[in-house]
Image (cartoon, rainbow, N blue to C red; front, side):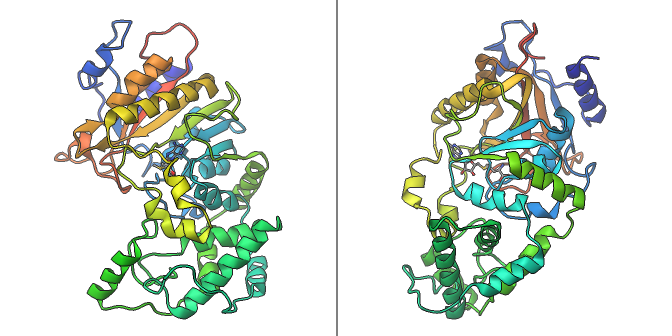
Length: 423
Ligand SMILES: C[S@@+](CC[C@H](N)C(=O)[O-])C[C@H]1O[C@@H](n2cnc3c(N)ncnc32)[C@H](O)[C@@H]1O
């Protein structure tokens, strides 16, 4: 059976909604279809939740609009073999990359935001807890560093002293070229613990950890909640989170992570211009682009950027944040062309899209015609329905990631044989 037929059968058998849904994409596809075939198949099911095993704890670093590890896992297992190369041009916290590594695949991760590599790379080489404890104990936490900005609305004075000392230590290690895997791990964990809504974070109660509020907003939160920052022990919290991150990793997974770390490539390029990636070198891309201006990746990360001495203004000019659909489509057109260049013949792209502007714009309607023009064939759209009930509207199912109402994946193939536009 040809590969497509096998995968189609798998998805159909698996689908709650056995009938294809002609009509939904009719308008979009008619405009571009050369073959007269005018419908895109849509599959609806709980594809990447209950049928899969629990996600590895090493993923548990929060990031704005991240996807669940089960999503890339689903496509990695369905469409690639061990040793093949998985890519994400908008890598974020590195969910695709880490999941590829855990499944014995190689990966390339790209994100314009340098935080992405800071959060992902260290998790390929988790340290032993004993080595980590020894390293942390050796970091001097003296109070000689004066703050550049007022952080008193977030941190107890002693916590702030500890954080400033840690930041300065990490900066010195990096600048001297002596930063090692333990320092990178500490940086990653500390970055993830800066602010949050429980006692596991360095800050007083605030928004969830992937969404730092401004100093002014935090003052208002403190006033309303009649709260002031309590002391949080930075080293203890780093140890605690580290134990949580490695708690369910098997020896096999640790080996796979280590192997992947030897071949892993991280880039900080614009996803539309990844000139360092060789043509025809990627077996599968699993990605989720910024959905127009739904998420402010730079502002929401301002404290994480500060802690890592990353210039926020420079980053603002590079991150794709657009308010008009026409602008978004222009950027995505370039991204799709680049994906076509680097995908090998018969390779796949799983491109997550969502609804924006209160459901008025469904981004798959933009992506599918662009992808077809680029040369990709469209295999279908997968909709992950988590709470599929009689009353739920399958086109607007809520998921846990902010910024979108539903999890839809446009599945594309660089099919070089003879085939209709829609395969
Ligand atoms: C939806 S998030 C990806 C989240 C990721 N799937 C995860 O699980 O963490 C989109 C990412 O795109 C990045 N980004 C925005 N504009 C970009 C561009 N032009 N090129 C590369 N990355 C970009 C942002 O920094 C953000 O990390």
